[in-house]
Image 1 (tube, helix red, strand yellow):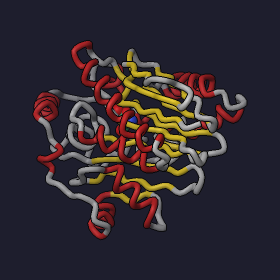
Image 2 (cartoon, helix red, strand yellow):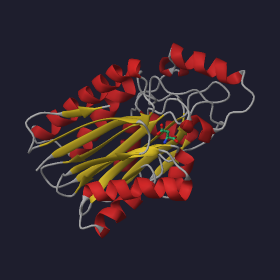
Image 3 (tube, rainbow, N blue to C red):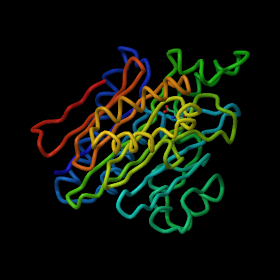
Image 4 (tube, rainbow, N blue to C red):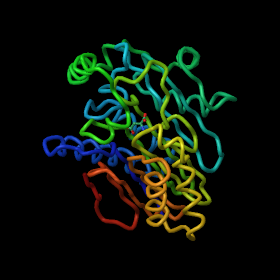
Length: 301
Ligand code: ASP
């Protein structure tokens, strides 16, 4: 069994943005699926699929990311290999075109797991990771949103998640032919965030977790709440406690997010057999998946 699942955020995605989200997750799925079905690794499938969504300005990751309170783009990303138990992550990093690729280089080449700010950029430079100007990541839509938010008095992240503010973090989970489960997540965080704010996405166990003997998960939603319930690891624990049932594991985790932390968001999950599951407590979640037992993709927003 090989299996692949991607997401492109969970929120009240308006009707006129549904098609862009559907196309984005469909193409990302196709990229990862091609790698896996040709015998490639789960790490490559996750990295390349997330790279596609980092390039697609529909999503809040790489190009198209939200702008922070002082007009900069700060990126968070992480990736975890559930077999080697190695992980790499970056937090509050600027000027990186493909954040998940920098997280991967840290997983592959560093003795550390999480590098923040200039240190992460420096490590990327030493390992040939593509740097870019802030302007290359900034799109007109987000500049305009930032300008409007500047004129508002107080902005609460929690309110943003209750209202129709976009939350288009991206993520992927793959199971390859060797039984390796890998999860990855990439984001520009939340709109107008305080400089240096780090969400759940780069925190192993919060936004991303993988254990090939149980499964893998990638999360999206209100990061401050997700951190409180350590959502991605909670999903894996719930899976384990429910005999590997991915659907129950995903649903129970989102219930806990809402009950304990009043949080909003969604998770994508694969169990160790490649059975996919999705759970969210927002009106919509953009996602796509395929397993070797299916004849076509399942793409939904
Ligand atoms: N979880 C992300 C964060 O709080 C945002 C999102 O998922 O859209 O940084």
